[in-house]
Structure formats: structure tokens, C-alpha cells
Amino acid sequence: MRTELDPAVVCGLVSDAARMGYEVVSVSGGEPFLYSGLLEVLREAKSLGLRTTVTTNGYFLQPRRLESLRDFVDVLAVSLDGPPELHNRLRGSPHAFDRLCAGVKHLRTSGLNFGFIHTLTAETWEHLLWIGEFAAGSGARLLQLHPLEMAGRGEGLGALCAEEDGLAKAYLVATALAAKYSGAMAVQVDLLHREQVRRFPEMVYADELSSDWDATTPSDLLGLIVVEGDGAVVPISYGFSRRYRICTLKEQGLERGWPSFLHREYPEFRRLCRGLFEELVSSNQRPLFNWHERVVARSHRVGKSCSGVAA
Image (cartoon, rainbow, N blue to C red; front, side, top):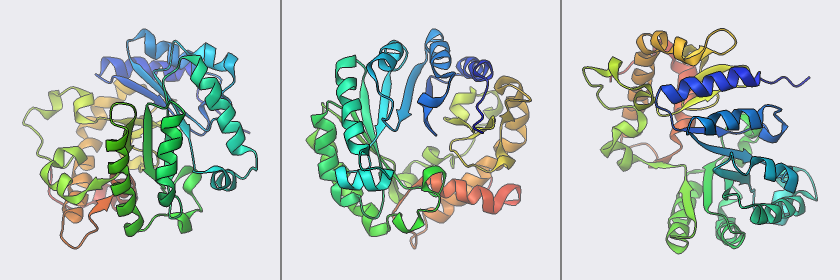
């Protein structure tokens, strides 16, 4: 039986987050349109002046549903796996791409800002030019390229993970797409380069903490928090080890749970990030990587016993 978080509990989290300096609420899968509290949560976020995004598989983009969301969603992102045959195969349905196109047609007339999110795999990077053309031609304002991760829908798809060569090619193609569609469609690729991280360690929470760090606005200390399906709130990414959790919503709200996290788990989180930073910037490591996937994996291997220089 599918369970879901009480919308009132999620709205409480949103309210806490707004007071703590967070500015964006993003709702993603499973499939957000199956969540009965979606509209209630989005209304709460907008009433607090927050920006909102929703990521969907595109199966439920009917006009009536889109009309109900129009005033409460700033960007709607639709998952796109590739050209028709590939999209159908990865989605397990011969009609998946046609259904996606029908939904996109409704999106174009709804007045909603929308984009596409594509999961990079070993066989999809070579279709990026087609994906860019399809997205721009559909009226999308954003194309996000995200490497397949071994979590969620990616579990059991390890054979499809793009190797280093494929990631490098995808990075170059994404750069070309960003230049081609500049001003019309933003192109974002969720990969970091080793030299970029070396120059800006604060991007990955590996810089030195200021002397008054414990008085800093929460959103400045931790740019992203994630609510898991069971109500656990963790740093920066789904799947992060629960040893670093901020709180569990069924027991305690975000604002109440933050002080304890700040003085116990947060320093450990920074040491974890610093240790990974030192590993990744060494010359024998691959130059491109998905930071979130790497730090989530390390959080499970190392936990609170992690070594490394304190940030």
C-alpha cells in the first residue's frame, strides 16, 4: 500500500524553511501528481513568497490539472529519456512518448513555464543534440541533464551508467547546446569539473567555516535539504545516510530539529565533504563527476567515523 506524508506536516516544513532563509520548494518523485497534498503544499509555498518547481514523468498533464496548478508552479519539469523508441523502451510502454507529447501540447497552451529533465546514461548521451532540438522546439525554457544515479528509478540499472568517456562527451555537447540556445533555453548539466571544485571548494561544502558559523542563516550553511518519503529530512540529496539527518517530521519539525543537527551532525557533514573534496581533487581522479552521487555514497561508507581535515 502506498503511503504519503500528511500535507499539514509538509506545509509545516515549508513554513519552517521559509523562516530559515530557504527560497525554493521543489517537489519530485516518485510522481508528484499522485500526491494528494500537492496543491496544498504548493499553495502554502507561494503564500510565503517562495518559488516552486515540480518534476513529473508527464503522464498526468491534462488541461484541468494544469489549470489548477498554474498560479502555484513557477517551473514544471518533464522527464524525457530520448527519442521515441528509446523513451518508450526505458519507460516500458509503446505509448509513453506519444503520451508525453500530448502532455507537452497541453503545457504549451497552459501558460506554465516548463522544461525537460533528461537522465544521462551510457546510451543516451549521443542523442543529446536531438533532445536539445526537441526541448527547444517544444517551447521549453530549461533543459537539465542529470547522470543516472543508483537510487530511485536508477536502482538495478547499473549497466546503463555512463562511463567517464560518455560523461565527458555529454559535458561538451551540453556546452554546445547552452551556446546554441542561449537566451531561449537554459541548459544545465549536473556535473562538476575537478578544477572548478579545486578553485571553489565552497561549492561542495569543503571550505573553511567562519568563526561565527553557528550564527549563520541555515540556508547559507546548507543550501539544499531533502524530505524522504518517510519524513526523514537529510542534507542535499535523496539517499543520504540517516546518520546525518536533520530531523524526522513525524517526530519533530525542521526548525526545532535544526539546533541539534547544527552542533552534532553538521560538523560531521562538513568533515565528510572535506574528505571527499581532497580525494576528488587529487590528480589521479576522473576530472568530471556527479558530486551528489559521490557524497551520498561516501556518507554510507564513512558515516560519523569519517576521517579528514575538519572544515
